[in-house]
Length: 65
Image (cartoon, rainbow, N blue to C red; front, side, top):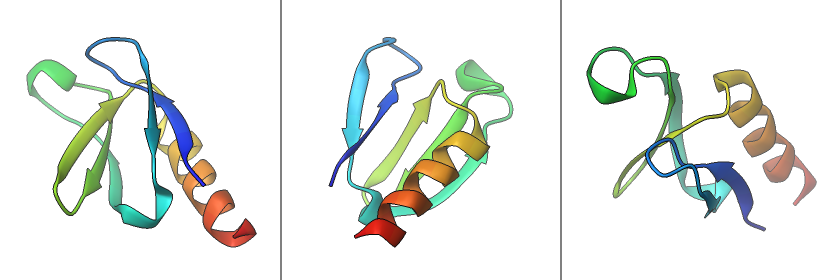
């Protein structure tokens, strides 16, 4: 199942497949300072939600499915 986050650049919702998340961390430097970075095999995404909220949502979805 897809989970939704708020994309940091546009403020719009984006659906993410939690099975493809490789890592999650707080970005430092550049345009996305302090935002949460979500890394996938094919690229990355900066979101407004906190690291703990993103990790919780991803883990919760993976455990429940």
